[in-house]
Length: 269
Ligand SMILES: NC(=O)C1=CN([C@@H]2O[C@H](COP(=O)(O)OP(=O)(O)OC[C@H]3O[C@@H](n4cnc5c(N)ncnc54)[C@H](OP(=O)(O)O)[C@@H]3O)[C@@H](O)[C@H]2O)C=CC1
Ligand SMILES: O=C(O)C1=N[C@H](C(=O)O)C[C@H](O)C1
Image (tube, rainbow, N blue to C red; front, side, top):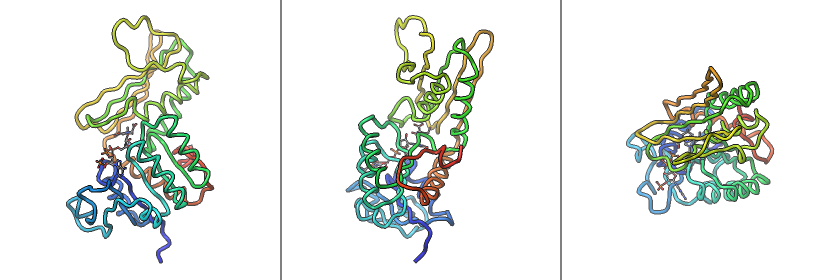
């Protein structure tokens, strides 16, 4: 029996699912032990490597979450809020580390994850890349250092298929800026503007979203003050950065006690 952690990828045929299959299969630190798709998906019953048009990876796609999670030490999940909530309960039953990249979760969804984290390790973040997590720290520091005369605006751009806005990353950056300023994001956030909006409220943290083409993910935090502007920027050019971060989280999670964690914990930031 190989003692390297066995990893299951949910949403295996998705943009992140495919990247995760490749990343986990290529890693010497873990084993790819399962791939989950929806019932009736045309990958079901097929080797996932062949389904992606490449060499066989020795793992057959299944729609039986309960059965496949039982083989896993970690489940890496980039799907939808509905699916993630369902998988959280099943991963906790299997005592598998649940790494969640899914964004757009509502407060009710987060409560369900909290319940799962009483029994298992849950690691969730809106962005698994090292660069964005560093930028989050910078945003907090810059917001704390610059006074209220610097208006904060967060702009994000993503591919045309993205369904949630603002992005999970934009919300992480907004939260960090709010923390740096010592304010509550819910109270400061201004999401989207249209029509006669009136002047910008003092202390607002604005969000705007661009959707188009195949943009992987771009985020700017603008601090616009009198006579100068500071802009913090992250540009993702390859989804592999998210997959590598998620794999790092899955391995790190093996030694942790049940509870909720984020990428700052994983990366020691
Ligand atoms: N935290 C991070 O670093 C990152 C987060 N993300 C987030 O990850 C999520 C996925 O993104 P992306 O890969 O682009 O999206 P995709 O739509 O390409 O992939 C999602 C996959 O999940 C599958 N899925 C949904 N519900 C189920 C279910 N009940 N059972 C099995 N499979 C299911 C979908 O299958 P089907 O097509 O059959 O519906 C699809 O294959 C988004 O929330 C995105 O914001 C993305 C990149 C980085
Ligand atoms: O949907 C995506 O693609 C991405 N989603 C995450 C987000 O919502 O911030 C992370 C990354 O930007 C790509």
